[in-house]
Image (cartoon, rainbow, N blue to C red; front, side, top):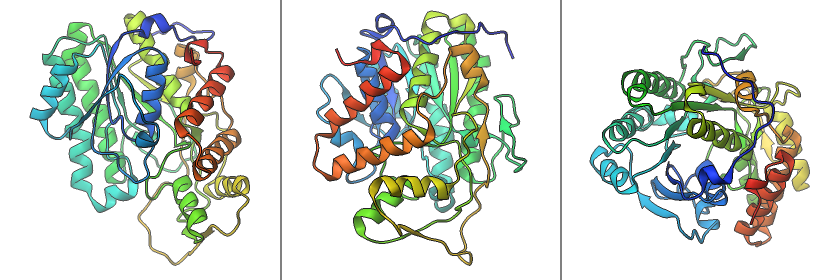
Amino acid sequence: MEALVTVARPMLDRCAWQGRRVLLTGHSGFKGAWMSLLLQRLGAQVSGLSLHPPSDPNLFELLAPWPGLLHQICDIRDDEALAGYVRSASPDIVVHMAAQALVQSAYAEPVKTIATNVMGTVNLLEQLRYTRPPAAVLVITSDKVYENREAGVDFPEDAALGGYDAYSASKAAAEILTSAYRRSFFDRIGVPLATARAGNVIGGGDWAPNRLIPDLWRAYIGNKQVLMRNPWAVRPWQHVLDPLYGYLLLLQQCITCPGNVPNAVNFAPSREPVRTVLEVSERFAGHLGAAGLWRTDASAETPYESRFLSIDSTLAATSLGWHARLEVDEAIQWSAEWYLAHEAGRDMRAFSMRQIDAFAELAGEPALLAT
């Protein structure tokens, strides 16, 4: 791994972002909608490409209106349509988040998952190398790109890539192909092309099926129980704003110091305290004042999922000065407060903005504060 300068303290510079044309794929998804808010906070001009919002309700529509955001519906598997949108956006910065992001859905539709996550990424990189070169490109993959042999280790960025299921394998393939495009094409034109691998994100506004927090919320408002597939599984839980903040720091380094950018970076909380699926569920239910939201069934047949997953974020700390600002229990609390506010009929754009302000205060990042 190349030598990197250790960064003592992160700091976003609004001047580096003001007026920048940012192409964000997957902007109408859970992480994408939060990222859109952050980019607009920094003064960027956001062009979003995505499918229609994936659920009803959905975060993107709850955060409307979106003044100044160019919203385009596009399937990244359609290379001709994608080419036109990329040319019209003429981006300075590209953040590629569009994906089929659910492990369980990948078991049901492996071909669609691979086409979206692999060929969708290739289609985008192909277009970017033929257009006016952007200043930086960031491809978002997953903490599940590593060959997990259940050894209880924290995976660093140079660990072997792999994947038991179609989702993990598709994201590992996207990593390999992004590396190939970097070395074959983007290095030659001086455009930093990096990947980011984040731990399991939670936060307000996620309604995806077969994800823990949304499933528990649906059980709560529907007065029913959800089947807990793997209660003792451990994941690197973190609030959605933490890795998104890391992505911004990485992109800013691509812009301001392109010769000193890591090719791939993990973003996850420290290993301690370890939280199982059951413990996260108990804490979330506690904030809702609820009980009995789940059931377990040892005889139920469910597709394989890893029991323990943890990734090493040392590189993010040493190269970007990044570390998770919210402890896992705080992340759970913030998530519960968001959903309860939504149920109470609050203005969720204003509420989400206040959570960003609170996060900015914790991170010591005045550039992210509302102006």
